[in-house]
Length: 309
Image (cartoon, rainbow, N blue to C red; front, side):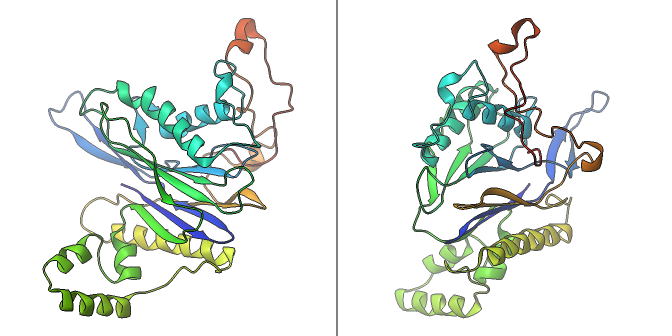
């Protein structure tokens, strides 16, 4: 399980996610399956080094034997024009749209990978593509659900340029109860059982119970803190609920804005930075046909300072 929190205000878009991932393991010597929770999964990614575009994931942490983390970085090489086998995937930095990026995500994750999985063998996976289209003043976000290998997903816009607020994927129960005063889905179930007059009264009661609000003019730093708060609340909720801690581990947070681009606010590493001071983006080198016969296409011009991910 996962928690992915998205917060959008006028100044930008925030994504926060935990690091827990639950996998089913079938030991060869035991005629049954068990589950294993790992607490270092990557769920938030930068989709282009020079453009304000991010991706978050929940549900399945892998497709086949490949982790979403490594696969997303393969896609990033294509979008940056560094995979010489896929030259047409390079984004035009003057004209690209977030919808175009979402379509590329479908082509990569579904057409090439998910659609080839055996039915019933691949967990449902959600993907959120968020950021700014070229020359646009406000961010937007598209949701993609990989549900069935025979059903090609259609990206759904969950934040348009004029929409603001928050959303939670994965385990939304804790945040929904805290902020809206009721668990997800329960509001509509109760409303269906009430008369029109009582529905109005019920809605008024929920308005009085509602907690924190996200307003468009909220300072960006406070939007970041709100996203972190929602993720932390969900981690605590999962920890003290019966069963395994299906939400947990370090919280990764990224902020995307029109002026500053994609910025990490906090994130984990599996390596200490002081032991790896040189060329942290060495993986962002050209790949594909240019590497035939051992000829490297990396001259250092693609390498930039900063964190991997």
